Image 1: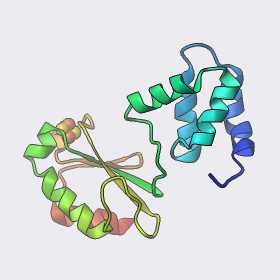
Image 2 (image 1 turned 90 degrees about the horizontal axis):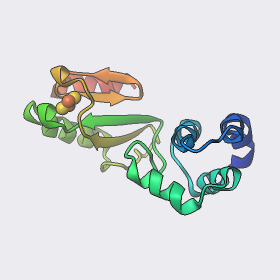
Image 3 (image 1 turned 90 degrees about the vertical axis):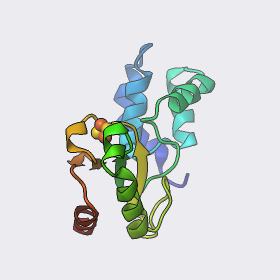
Length: 154
Ligand code: FES
């Protein structure tokens, strides 16, 4: 990765790394992901060095939890729910619309770097099915038309 990782980490992660105790690895990884948007290898290596946790253990944790991303993402991360309620209410059609507009596969980044879209299991707002999140915002009762409008807003 081409960036001043060490410096960024120092500023934003150092307090977490300093106070590392067994069981605080997940919050550290969450914080690192918040800083970078994903978890590059050199960041994971830095965390391993600073905490003394074996790299293999860190990689194990990162790959176990779906919340952690090991690939870069676009500026806006779209999480499209494919849980049962959303599936029954047309999430497949919503996915087609998103793919058509963004012209990218799931997990890819749009050419302008603005979006990455991922399918996820239940977002926890089934009464709004079909639903998606963009960053921290939730959008529900999606239709072809509303998805186009929402994406145009960005
Ligand atoms: S199934 Fe989509 S929010 Fe629960």
